Image 1 (spheres, rainbow, N blue to C red):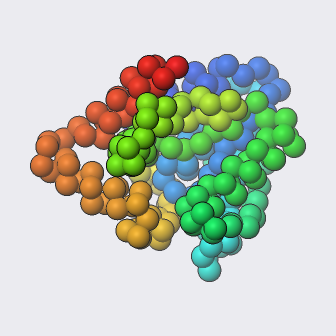
Image 2 (cartoon, rainbow, N blue to C red):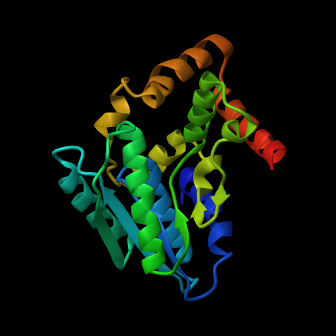
Length: 229
């Protein structure tokens, strides 16, 4: 195993060890580097734990190639070793915007599937970079402590073990295991505030203020979560 794989497997291991033999868990996989690296680490760490691993890829049907992307992702998951791979099509309402609508549809589908399969946990592939973006967007909106605390590693059945892992590490992990990940075109569209923060604001802050901005924002989120709690 290489460094990136070791670090990601180390991040997921404690959460799997909380489960008991026979427990089921879901992992949501978009086909991007973050969720593919997460899915790979989970199935490898599950091998000796007698857990029921179920991989789910959500087809938001927002792009012409979405069905093909979902099928390719499902094939990759089967090659990883997943015996149960689901493709769940959802209908996205755009009344509150595409991002919010897709998120709501995704979580509704995951919640329904978790109940159907009696899943103890649902694993999500958000990284430390996602956390930093969330905090910065919250600051821009003038949010309070709870909002600025960002995403919790554990929130009910939802688990985000990669909040201690960078996006660069997940991309490196995918290259190390020789799996091709998908770059969602929406992630390059700066009409979305999060994409603008990712591609323009954070790089400028790193350039002008020095490296480590994303890590500092994620650390602030952790401190603010403790305060809010």
